[in-house]
Length: 184
Image (cartoon, rainbow, N blue to C red; front, side):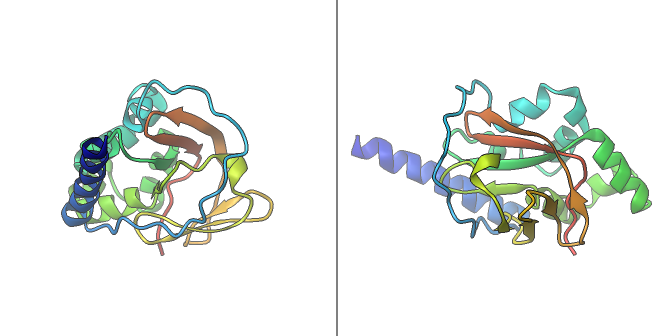
């Protein structure tokens, strides 16, 4: 049993170091870890498989592949909280920034920074009912604000709407959002 715990901790450490080293992200989260207030349904897919199984996330899946994050986000020993923008959200931000999808995907540093702003890696996934207000430090070290009304706001001051919450995964939870989170 002790050897299994060491192997599990080692695998998680290797994946986090790999994410940090390969993608210039710091695997930190200053999220106060909530106490679960309800039981979640049994998950059968990881966070990547949830995205791959929904056509509304095809651009997100392409972005994760282009950034080389599929294996990291598929880690069975992780506890990710993912804010997943829809295809419409990606199309909107590309139009706002006057950028093509190919241009975004070619800029791996920018793509990785943006994707890291959609991920929390903690000791447990964070479900919608467990967070009422406050600032969440994302994997990219950018702040996501949750207002007392339960609304999200990115560092650019844009309000983000949660379209669907608490899609349970074997390695975390996915929340569907209507905009791509943008750092300042």
